[in-house]
Image 1 (cartoon, rainbow, N blue to C red):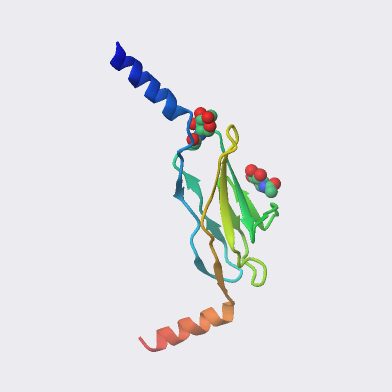
Image 2 (image 1 turned 90 degrees about the vertical axis):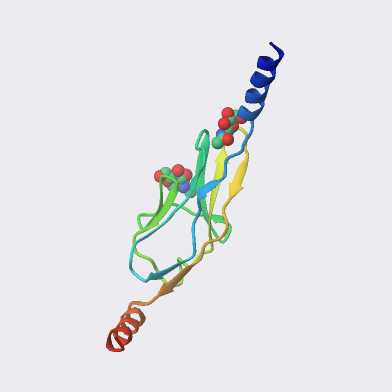
Length: 126
Ligand SMILES: *[C@@H]1O[C@H](CO)[C@@H](O)[C@H](O)[C@H]1NC(C)=O
Ligand SMILES: *[C@@H]1O[C@H](CO)[C@@H](O)[C@H](O)[C@H]1NC(C)=O
């Protein structure tokens, strides 16, 4: 009887806690200007959890070019001078208010001509 009670008490204590963590968090990326990317974010347990994205600490508004898609952030045409970051994903348990912030992710955005130049050099030296 006592053993059963202790087990039940243990389960209840664990259920009330926020012990989720980032199972996916955004990474630094090398991207070519004008291309599409998705910054990934997810947590180990999604119960009551909502996601937000920030750039330089400011909440990112959704636009037709750059928007949150589920828990991820999608950019349809990456722009130099606007999209470098740093980005962070924020996961909040709306019931408890407990919030986790991912590490920062930066985009290294190359202009198209530089990208093609690099590839031409690469091809001719092969
Ligand atoms: C969020 O909080 C509620 C209430 O404490 C809890 O039941 C739920 O498991 C929590 N979610 C996560 C992912 O920890
Ligand atoms: C952007 O849209 C997503 C749903 O697609 C929503 O969860 C999120 O709160 C929105 N972000 C802002 C800043 O309104």
